[in-house]
Amino acid sequence: MAKTAILRARVDSEKVTAAEQVFSKLGISVADAINLFLGQVCIQKGIPFALTTRPHLDLSNATLSEIEERYADRIPNPQTSAALSEKPSRRFKTATQALRSLES
Image 1 (cartoon, helix red, strand yellow):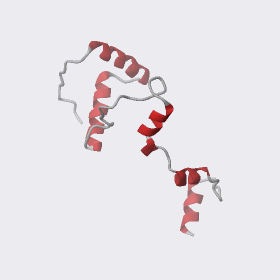
Image 2: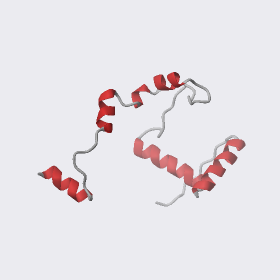
Image 3: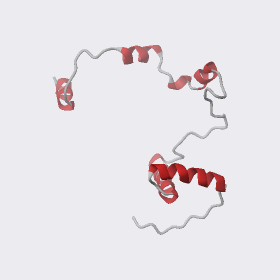
């Protein structure tokens, strides 16, 4: 697809510099990053990350219980934890073998 649109936006120059350093490590340009963002907006039909007014919590600014409470919906419940800790009854060397076992 031809790139013909031009975007202009006023942004914080310090943020741009910090972002450019990250993009450089990733081997992409600011324009590439913007195109990636716009592509994800189109795919997901919305902003591709959660928008919230709550501050980000981590161990530098919150207690472990505050973090657990905030992200409780992302922590596996006891049933899921038990299933994740089970050892598989059978192991397969290839995906084909695993799929064949499902058919039988």
